[in-house]
Length: 607
Image 1: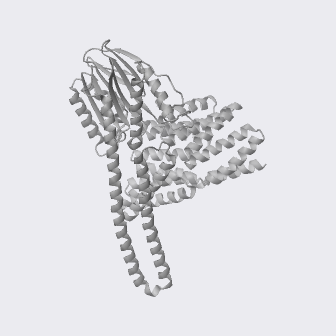
Image 2: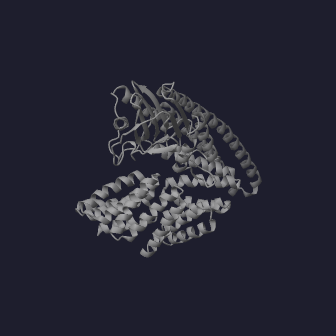
Image 3: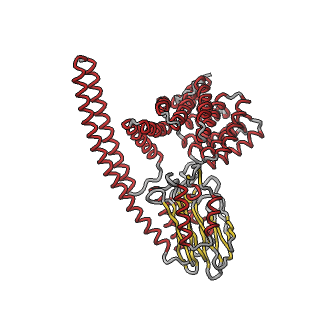
């Protein structure tokens, strides 16, 4: 009886967005059922705890809890419980930005749901796949899956499912710039969630409606809906939603001409974003990062003190104005002087912050020189091939992509790698990758390309102390590795996600890579070795995914791997210097004024 009450209280608080209280009640209920050896009820309470963590934005805790409950459901062979847990895991990966992983998991759950004739689970699987396409801007596929999910939810009379599928259809029409349809779907979902008192979903749709009005240049309505969403998000401690709302509010205020409010919103966004980033950060190295964090805190304290002084001044003036209405003009003039003084102080502090940011940028530029030296050492110039080009365009000052070219006895090693992250964290990973590759070839006898990647995977896991996929950070790298034996005129290739292109007699051949990174992974597949008997003037290309993933063009979509492959084939008859110039001009024109999405690396060589 007591466990039933805890469960009911847990659900009411979960539904209305009081996540801390919901988690407390569900944990009490789960522990009670475990003590009673009631595995089924304990697992379902744990499933609800995972949902609480997910909607609260605590994705690591949610994934940990969902994996624990999968094991409980497997103990009692509860297929419905296992299915629902995997669907939640798919949605967690979507929140993390692992859209391909979401699609993979939810295609499996879709098949399981059809087999079990579970229409509701089938609908949630369809919706997750549609969301993954929506996030990757593959809009037509996204629409088909989301609309099918909405129809399934309608068959099941699942009002919450209908609401969130209307939310996602609204987002689809927002991206298609069909604002009337977007608002129609979003308002339908909003009405359902409001009547059901689902504060999290209600807040989420309000934020999307705010984005629609922002696109329509109706800034007053945009701010109105965003502020209402923000009020609910703050009450529920939804930090990721709060960060996104502050960022969108800053844009809306700026376009509306309310620059003070725009500055305040972006400061709050930056402060919260840095706090969350530091809480999640797991790989803290180098004095550069320490310096950045210290100076960031000093800047935040300075800005907070300015804001506090302004608030105190305004509060004093309001109290005095209330008590001494007859002298309102005098105090209004005094308030004006205080505001002018504070604005002057803010301007001075802004100059100090800009100076600090310049110092930080100088430090990162110095780190770039260090990285360039390491890349130069890895290349061993002059290059030991007939002809070669390298296109390396970091997203930030330093790069998470790197290339490696070196001779070892009769072997020439050529590699292109894409490390986890970009900027400073990616650069640290790239330096680790170069160091470990040097170790593999310096202290070991020559071996196949696949064996090199296997050894590199072991060394990276040891260096990063990675022991288990479920609990460890997924740092590692994607890489295409070639080992050339000029005496035998053979090239060995092994790839982790990144393939190899060969152009011979104006025909392009692709050698595929294993869909595994070099590092810890859920299911670590062995790397495969390809042996190619090359001919004179064969050309080879290895690269990261940055070029194909760059967003741009008239439709603001990714360049795409198929177009990249056509581009490589079209430029292959040209000299290497012409090829790299064409690649660089093509991506610059495609990108236009769009920010660079990721580090870009393309390496071509002729044997």
